[in-house]
Image 1 (cartoon, rainbow, N blue to C red):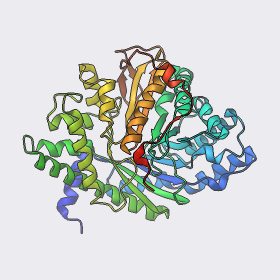
Image 2: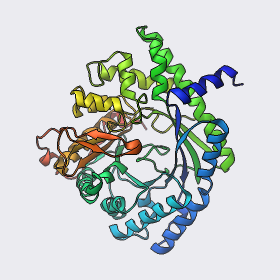
Image 3: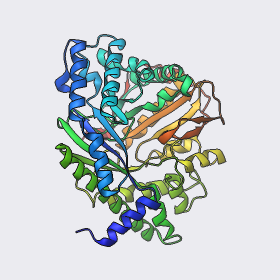
Image 4: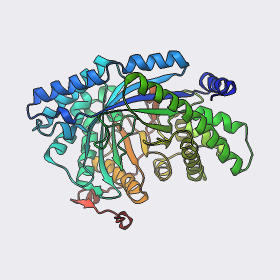
Length: 454
């Protein structure tokens, strides 16, 4: 039973502390859309998406109205398109036609984003997967709602450095093709190590091949709620601090569980997971960096930041798994720069550097996220940044990711406006020393010794 006090408390969190359900995401399998004829493949993809997801937006709005819980995004994720289009697509241009079909389907059903223009290449690339990766710049430049990802490494397989090198070049090309919008195309692409099959958050969402034909995944966010709770225990011991975070995460997850069950029942699609991720927005009071400051830091990036973030991430997960039997995705704390006002302030103050962010990714939910870098950064340097982050994920058996935006025409200290949930970001400096000879070696970095657990 839910008490009257819990209802009042939840209403307060929504009205005053920026609690929201960040997304309801329908995952849709497109494996039954595979066809050697490209036109037929596109037709099947469009029909499958517009049939399965036709009521998603309407149902989301109904739940918002019935429970007064804001649902910020309604999204779709699909089977990695490199698998779906492999039989029909012989060139990168062929894959771009599928990207446009995904975009058209997303517009038809009215969702905010569609993810899954993806490839899984942690050990090697098929010709189809290489063609998809090479098509990403054009695909993101010619669509509005399509998001893309590539998984280039895992603890079990190591890191595919051929793919890492190619992606560095591809990110530069994407930046150039979307330079009229401050290289915004790069904000819709993320590269992963150990990517989960059930992530509802963009840009990395795709519908894993181990999933059912369709599934409902819900992403919940509440950094403002956690910060407000911690304000009431300022100066208390670590035990009290941890208990407060756990209890708050439990309450936030309960809201997501309610929305997930309602959406599943109304849509007739099985419930998958709750992703409890403290995902910030540019709104004042909705910042993960502000939580770190409330824990006791002057700025995110000060000494102690990694320890504070590790504590936060662990307690969020401990609280969340008590509220739902199916917690998954990326659950934890996100540390994007452009989407978090506290992170932006820390960068401007000189407290937060790219190297400190990399250290923080050892204990956070994802990795280097929404970071603007100078437009003249070399492709090999971007590949080196990706390789470093993939190594953290591989060795630590966790998901890591990189979403960097080399903003064409912008240099260190200039500000880039992305708008909406993507916010704005100061361009951060990048280590100028070369890693060309390292990146240009061929092959893959082998899996670590602790991967052999069979």
